[in-house]
Length: 458
Image 1 (spheres, rainbow, N blue to C red):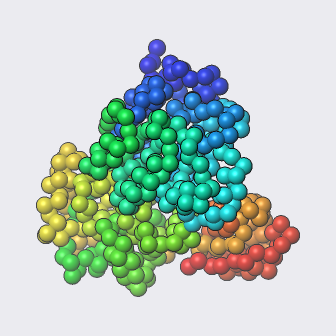
Image 2 (cartoon, rainbow, N blue to C red):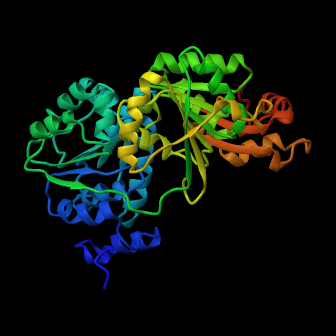
Image 3 (cartoon, helix red, strand yellow):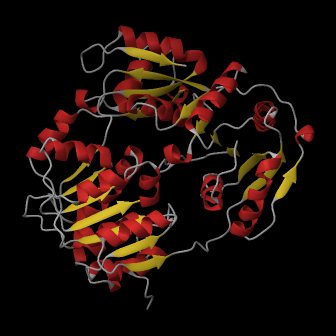
């Protein structure tokens, strides 16, 4: 009998049955190592990469000891970004389906405080959120953490990178000392060790290395100079003509500069970094996922936690200072059995970093020549995104939006792309040639018996 079966763990049958229904037959490496410890109440520090199954690794232990009849916050999960918090909360809700009335709330910035406060007044069992917004609620005395028995820090390294250390310490000071603490991190910088000594009790260390089949990613390094780097980046992009590209920069200001340059050259690029307001960030990600902006220029911190599928190309505009970060960057392409491409521009002063990368990946890198690249025409994204000032709060559903756009019979359903309905707004991708027509149909028509404002994001 396999030792990796969830049924071998001391979990109630309803939880096992729910895991089976989700297709969770055998544990991943991180789950196999951490769950016996977390179920036993041990503090755990786990080094594991994104996609390793860590949400179930810490979520099952939290749900296992949850007292549903006790309408107090018993579990707190802190994440560096709203996107990761939403992702973790959604996965946790699926894991919690084995028992009725488990309430999981998401507390993140970029959303109004009042609806969150009202939800908290009605009680909750588990909070998933970002440190800044959690701290806001503590300051306004709308969040009581005095009954927390399980604390999770997910992607702790990125929270520290983003300057959340003081917030984290302040939040933890509002919790009982007698609790279980689990810290999950893709890397293990010194700051993690310092933090664990102050907030954990005899933590057990776990490190899981991925040994699955090597992804099919073509990685190539191109020598450039500071004066020619922008022009050489353009050469790479025109050569590949990728549907979806992420360009990584080390600093926020560089993201803006690169994005502005590419747009001036006629490409469809958008910057993503920590200085964006949440509304701007949501729009950028909607346009990128909808295929109406083909290039995302991002910092590592801003891109952490994003679940972007079918990414064709990753470009390192600058080599990161840590070789582990390089591996995280290129690992965003070539997923789910698909092939991917990762290109890196390097200047002579960055050449020494390549040795560290070779040591990290366990092999030598390949070099390319910019003068041998093809010069193709500019890539024009297939779609334009429409933003509608209405969402779930207005009872809008994707079907309502499709119905409004196809009502005149001049736009077919297959000319509509992704639709993302959030609490207050909705985003829909429409083929470029039909976008203006769709805009007019929504502006002049009705959904749910009312008019909605609509905007073209292009």
